[in-house]
Structures are given as C-alpha cells and as structure tokens.
Length: 373
Image (tube, rainbow, N blue to C red):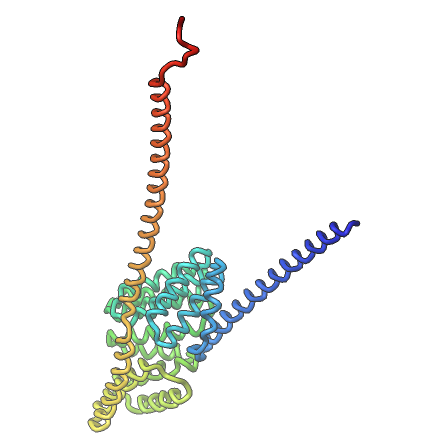
C-alpha cells in the first residue's frame, strides 16, 4: 500500500470520526435540553417556584433552531409557565400561542390542548367569557380519549357558564365532567366538580343540595384545594343560619390556610365571606377591618391585571400572525411577478435581437460574387 493511499484512508477515518463525534454531541445536547423541559414541567405540576428557570428559554431556542417541533411545543409551554410565574403575561401568551402552533405542526395534540387551556386561564381575567369558553372547549376537543383531561376542561367550561348566569348549560357540563372524572378515577377533578356543583346550587339558593355536594367533595379534595372546599361549607352554613357548624368549618378553614399558600383570589373570597359573617352577628368593627383587608387584596388583583390586558395581547398576536402570513404571501407573489417580468424582458430582448438580425440580412447589399454578368 502506497503512502498516498494510506493518507487518503487516514483522512477518511478522521472525517468519519469527526462526524460521529458531532452527531453524538448533538444528540447529547438534545437530551440535555429535553431534560430541562421535563424538569420545569414537573416542577410546575408540583406547584414549585419556576420563576428563575431561565434555562428553559435556551432549550426552546435550540429546538426551534433545529426545526425540532415535537420538542419545541412542550418547551414553549414551559416557557409560558415561567413567563406567567413572573407576571409577564404578554410573553406568556405568545409562548402558549407558539406551543399551539408547533404542537399542531408536529401532530402533538397534547401540547396544543395544554396551550388552549392555558390561554383560556390567561384570558379568564380579561372579562371576555366567550373567548375563555371557546379555548376550554377547544382544549377538551384536542384531548380526545384522555377522559381525565377532558373532564377538567368541561369543568372549567361549566364554571364560566356560572359566571355569565348560564345555569342550565353549567349543569350540563358539570354532569359531563363528573361522568368523565369518575370513569377515569380522577379523584382530584371529581372533588372539584362536586365543589363547583355546590357553587351552582348556592347561586340558585338550593343550599341543601349544595351541602350534599360538598359532603361528597370533602373526602376527595387535596390539601391545596381544601381551604376553598371548607370556605364553601362555611358559606352554606352561614346561609342556613347554623352557627355551630359555621364556626367549626370556619376554624377548619383557617387551619387549612396555614398549611398552604393561598392565591390572592382565594384570600379575597375568604375576606368577602368574613365580612358577611361579621355583619350577620352585628360585629361591625370586625366587618370594617375585614373590608379594609378585602380592599387591599382586591387592589393587588386589579394591579396585576392592569399590568397587561391579555385579551389585547391575544388580538395583537393574532393580528401580527395574520399580517406576517399576508406579508409572506405578498412576497411570494412579488417574487413570481419579478421572475415573470425578467422572463418576459429576456424573451423581448431575444425577439428584438432576432428581428434586428433579420433586418440586417435583408438590408445588406449582395456580394460581388453573386452579381450576374
């Protein structure tokens, strides 16, 4: 074997080794980025603080850059959760929209369903209940055979129907959600449905039915949602005028609130109840103090909502998406028009040259060799 052949073989082996190492490194980085997405998702599901997980943005950028839409969709979802944890609602809405977009491109209905549900949650504070209901229904449709997830979406639809006083529709969706939750043995969602049933019955002043639903909910409710369930029990007994039961469940509610971090919305609901309870026994001083605390929580909620109108954000995103699509179509048309004009100009030049060449031959005098004698 000559030295030349040996050198060529060595170069080929080095090239193959380099390509192999590059592929391994790329695969390793993909796995690392996917691990980041999984970590953020699991932390979010466990109600842990994810506001500082900025590494998720690197993972999302990496997947989009490599056209890995199957991984880009869940990465975009986690980005949205992190943005929302930091109260960056505009960025969160954009992330959820991207998750829906990439999820549908990759055939990932799970990510698209989560995106629709999270968009609905964001819009919930905007006051446009019709859009919220549409998002929840779209999420339910995307879940397909996932009975548990579909139950959660329909339960959310029912709650929005209660907000707009569509009680008949709310009871229909509550029944559907309950059947799905029981069929999938999802006790958390079943407890939530029973609790929402109690809210619906309270709104139509059927407190006995509300109490029965809450009794079915309590054995199933988890620790995080226990304060709300106990609050609803206390509210029912306040309406029924049963002070002993009211005081018992009110005490249980305070104990439950000490073990979990309650949202501002939950705090506002508790203070609203305490105001009514104090007024019911003529304790106007306590009612006044609770009213001040309620106002402060309400102001905090209004301030958060005023930071960004997610409804306007969604409209802005949709408008920009439509504008971008229109611009792409216009650019495509303009390219074809330019190509067509160039072709026509080239053809015109060619025809002109042919004509000029023909005219030149016709107008030129005959050569001396061709002159007749």
